[in-house]
Image 1 (tube, rainbow, N blue to C red):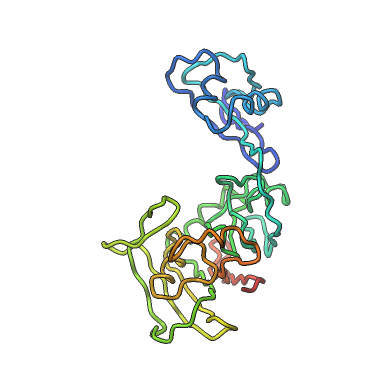
Image 2 (tube, one colour; image 1 turned 60 degrees about the vertical axis):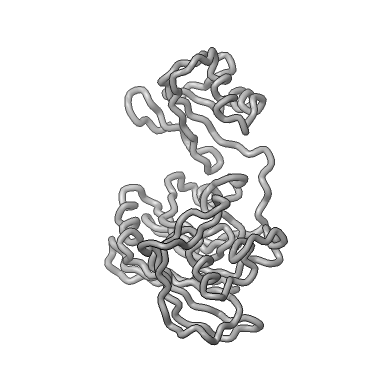
Length: 300
């Protein structure tokens, strides 16, 4: 374990997953497990007992805690998250580039970038940590679970901020490709600027009136089989931005289960992936000063 100060130890990674932490609030629980059972009701008491028996619930100093551990408000408790039934994603990512500071992965459709909801081990981050042994690996940006293509990761925490600044200051060029219906009325190229906020249900986004906070450049569109291949350059990174902007101008992305309307028949159908690909990343490396160009090897 890595020591953070004289009393608190940061637990080591376990199967590519870092420990989560909770500071115990004021309360009248007699034992720690009583709080955990109530605070994380979706986990269940038996699951917490199992984790404790296997040493997966730890004190701030790194000592294993048991079902008999008393509840002490203010204490910090570390625990490792587990999923009882996690669906397996039958597609693999490729590592296109890696040095001491940066890793570029080529993600398949359906694989989430980071653990969330019903996915933990079946996430790009955890898979890459297990593959490379790099516990400090951290994504510099995100793409949707349904989107395939390039994702950049920081390898070295000491230089992470230099690469994060590329995204924060729009000094990285991202190009996407999407398959969608033909629309000869669109005067390409053009830019769509709208205000995107959380939608209803919560996992959707929506456009509303107000100052724009999203920008997408529609660069070109060419015939491609039964659809058109659209080339897009997002200048911002709002949730579902490209999917929402495409649907809003009348060309919803092929096989999109969310926009312009929810479609249960497309959810997790591996034979019909969302036809959206993060094709390229272009930027000047903040450490070497060299221009870097990365291209996905995948096709829609």
